[in-house]
Length: 147
Image (cartoon, rainbow, N blue to C red):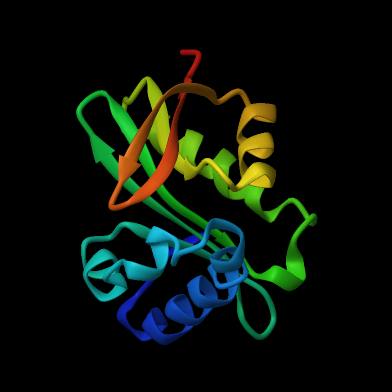
């Protein structure tokens, strides 16, 4: 795992496109991660990537907030689903939260992304509410970390 650099921008955007485009049909609109400014997120040191032999395999966007680390985006290349990359990215987020002295993680996910919701719940995230985010219905989820 490493921070994405400026030279990773095209690969990051391609990975996000490949990971989220299949969800457009499911949720009926473009998922929010397709709208993000990855040049700005990379410049701010928010994008962490994992790569294989010839491409980025996954990424996670982490944003420290007051008392919590926001998992703003988790993307895994579609060819690599089911290989544990998403779980590894979320475990990395827990390590980062602890390193930053933050006692919890939070994230949001579209209510129609059942596979993602099931993954998050299996990892200890709990639904804390529901919100309308830019015209999209999302579950708010949180995971407290043990000290």
